Image 1: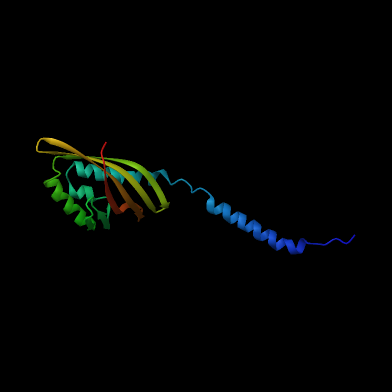
Image 2: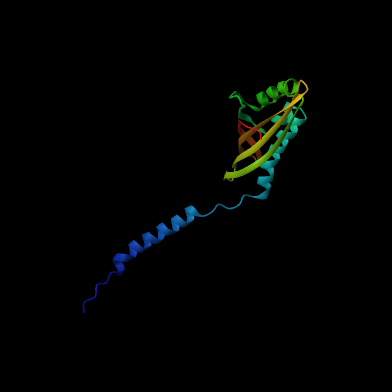
Length: 164
């Protein structure tokens, strides 16, 4: 009986299929968990913002931001740079938000790369004005970047939500 030897012809095809299967397995593999120290550092930046607000210190509030940070306020105003964030917040701390309390709760930290984190934060701000306390809510989206070993907020977007 005449047998057809397909081994040499099939070998490149089988190798290509194996390579594709390996590549598909690598690309769908779950990312490794970030180091706990990075997660803590990212969350600490959120705590620093909250502490700076509640201390009514623009300087402390702005400290976790990168020098060239972008900050979009709830009304759409776009502020650029840590110094402008500091000065702008000090003005509101000295006036309309002098009797306010901010509570921030991290909803999610997602490391896009080992040196880039996307962070979602729930915010509740209680403001006492004219004998009444008003409460406002927001979802804050932050992009943090690790530079020279330190995590800094490079982008901040504040979106108002209904308080229940």
